Amino acid sequence: MDDINGDGHNDVLFGNEHTISWYDNADGTGALGVSKNIFFDSNFDIQSDLTVGDLDGDGDLDILFYERNQDKFSWLENLDGLGNFSSEQIIIYPNQTYNFNPTIADVNGDGANDIIYFNANDEAILWIENIPDQGTFSSEAIIIDNLNSGYHFRLSDIDSDGDLDIVTSSGSGSASNSNYKISWYENTNGQGSFENEHIVQDGINSYISGIETVALNMSDNTIDIIAYYGYSDNIVWFSNVLGDGNFSTSQIIGNSAYDAHKLKITDGDGDGDQDILTASADDIHWYEQTLNGVFAPKQFIANVSNNAIGKIDANLIDSDQNIDVITASDLNDTISWYSNVDGDGSSWEQNTLLNRYAYGPTPLDFDGDGDKDFLAYSSTNEIALFKSQNGLGDFELFEKILLPYNIGKITGFEDFDGDGDIDLPVSADGIVLLKNDEKVILAMSKLYQQ
Image (cartoon, one colour):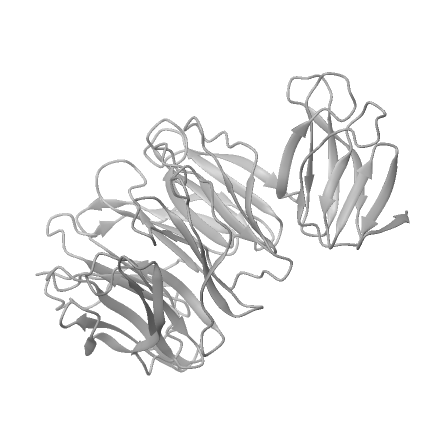
């Protein structure tokens, strides 16, 4: 969730299969409008989360992604700061495949945001420098190596010297015999030279499935480390007591965070300190920080069935200034958000934005009765038409159309055959024209009757 169009409200950005889209939270209430498709490629397959940041120094949020089918890093420029994006601009074709966790940050302190990522083949963190005032990027360079399973890393100023250091987790093993460690690497000259490894803790007998860096203890306001141990189901905290990178031994925040593969640090109850939000395959919980560094037992927010949670975030969605929660699933094509009703984390209300037909929900009057109906489509290439029953927002499924093509985009509704009703042009491995009362397929400049 980020403010894509600069209106002061956090919007929703997502990518799935061949498309990148965003939803405008126009009035700040969480009543998101129709999705705006900003990128489509039939070969497109996102390897990891979309990343937003200012890559061209104009003060608005651009979009960075790694596409694994063609093995490339690309970005989309936010042309006007209003969410109108450029076509794809390729940054680099990396030397190695299997790249993860692309991150935007100014590593060398020159005022231009660079790109940092982990490569599984090299077992290394690499850096692509953003050359200031040129709009170009350097070739990739390894800055930290020998990181077995080093997918999780964070950039923060650990030693309080004004530049960005890197916190990593790495190791190997099984549930019964593991050897992992958490370290931080000092940006020794402030220009992207990471030579000194400082071990926070080693010999950890558990896979580390997530780390975060945050000023958790508000009394010292230094950057601490939060980690989740996957095999032992512990969430632990390392306190950076003096802000110089000398960390305390681990302190357990929660020891029953079963399969909590997603972590988010946020002020869930509006009391000014940082709480911890977790998502497992099926459940969302949060841990309230009641005093500096003291956490209450986990509290339940919601259950999401079918191992559905793929991503979790927390931010202001509606206009009540409370931190809300949003989840996305690539298993059941659902995006939901949970309103923090009272602002203190005690009551949460679910709002499902998309359910199964998770792409392109679009209002239109396809039956000519004056009420707005809508259509949407799914990841299984199925188009659904939902008919308004009374004009008051109550809908019923009217028709389902299964296409033997990969649906890219449905747009430009109008009467193509002059019979007075609306027809539907579809980008789907060619162009498909869905006419009211019949279907006509036009692809590769040839006409086929279905």
